[in-house]
Length: 257
Image (cartoon, rainbow, N blue to C red; front, side, top):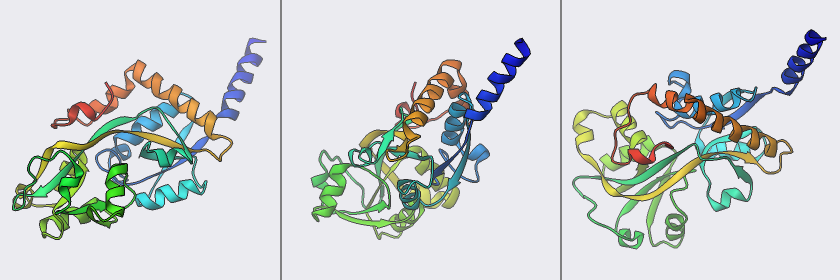
């Protein structure tokens, strides 16, 4: 009788388990197809779902296409995005995965001095990456022509433009920016770039679940339970420790404590 009951429980768990497909973009060291275990955030998401019996397959693509594909219902979830008001119209947002502080990078030939309002940046040419939120105010001012904003598809393109004086400012989180600069630019080039200590914004990132999908509410609850579980077990912190200590002026915002 006990064996039969155990078999029923195992079969029930197996029947409920699912391999999930999640869209994601390149954002090393947080997420990268070439990184060990695909980066920190995929490890966190995978570990959270594994506690609930699900496996995860990540499909990497440009951020804009990642979001558009998820909006069409091609994936079980989209990783990993700020929970902006316009996104909440179409998606449920998970509990926060981590926090990021976004700063303006500049070329030392044209430094950004103290600023308090985005309105003060109207004389700068600002680079942006397609699909990124930055802030609602940022995009509103860009649409009104108050800010001069030029978008490209990758952060790498924006740093190249910054070095060539084709843009004056570029907003990006410090940890991914440091990684990107180290991977693609010389020490002499990196020395020419700096960032302003005042953040444009501090925002949390989330896993998004399409509201139109019948399974999304359950997957949202399942993931949040798993995320809580790996934090309580210490697995979350172990994943962070696997890449070494995070040292940055905005390090206190990088991951939840």
